[in-house]
Image (cartoon, rainbow, N blue to C red; front, top):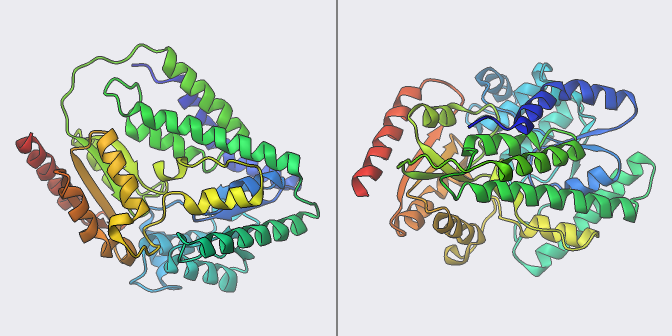
Amino acid sequence: MPRPSALTELNDLLAKRPEELKQAKAEGRKVVGYFCSYIPEEIIWALGMIPLRLCRAGNNQAVSVGATYLTSNACPFACSCVGLKKDGRDGYFKLIDYVVDAPACLQMRRVLEVWEKYFEVRVLSLALPRQFYSVRGQAYFAQAVEQLSRELAHDQGINLDSARLTQAVELFNDIRRQQRWLYDGLKQASFALDWRQVLGVIRAGLLLDREQYLQLLHELVAQLKSQAPDNTPARKARLLIAGAMLAPGDDKLVNILAEVGAEVVMDELCTGSRSIYGEIKQPDINSIAQRYLSNIPCGSLPYPKLDDDPRHKHLRRLLTEYRIEGVIYYTLRFCDAYNFKAGHMRHLITSMGISFLHISSDYTNADVGQMRTRVEAFLESIQHRT
């Protein structure tokens, strides 16, 4: 099936984006970087700033540089975030004016400290309650979001305009609606895009001008609705990828799955589908804070009752709706929170009669052959079960 023209235009815009950001900075706009999906982009955008998620990875040289500031036993993504900033050649990391973040992960909190101390980057922290599920935690987070909005408004020398905030809420709600439509399409074998293409669209939205991005999302959805379905019969195991950070550039596992012809139809990742859920019901600080804190939680946050864990509930729903036959649980080495929960995830998934594979890796190529062998064996085991 021909590649939708909106996808081509998205890729063209991504190639031009660093130069666009340079021009925007020259015109006086601030570029606000963030690492974690708990940051309310609506507030940044409503204040005339440019939100930019800094989640690039896969460069092992950057990991080695970052480890000199952290430790060789630190998460590769955390080390990469330090190394890319130190190197200074990455267009996005270089162009930010300052960082706003609410790290669920303690290692990423250390990254913020290093950026502030050694690279003299201004960091605004959004306090994230560990008891995110409690009434007190929600009230605490709403106050933290209010404080952040005041700090950002003070930096801009303006007040947060209610009309502009309404615009922002409508914009980002619509973006998430269109993204959900794309992911919903993956439930059908005849959908014109594959998971890897949908993931690329989601990742593009972390970097592009959000109004341009939404326009292209509408064009892409319209093009897909107008195309005849692909009725080519295929019988492959339907897979879901869950786990820790799978950032743009960390494509080792994704490439292996493509090479062996695996059929990934869904993910449960903060750089993928986890960011698309939840509507902001009212254009005010409390509603914005509620959406971000009550969305699918990061695995780095503790939840006391496994049977009632909202992340587990969400995963069960995905496994059923997408008719998943196998789950690949991907973690980075030294990512303690997600590696610790691998046993719980295995029990949850296998109890539903679904195959489970845990892969823990880093950004080197040393284990590519081993990973491919394990993935191929995993696919064969699913075929023998069906």
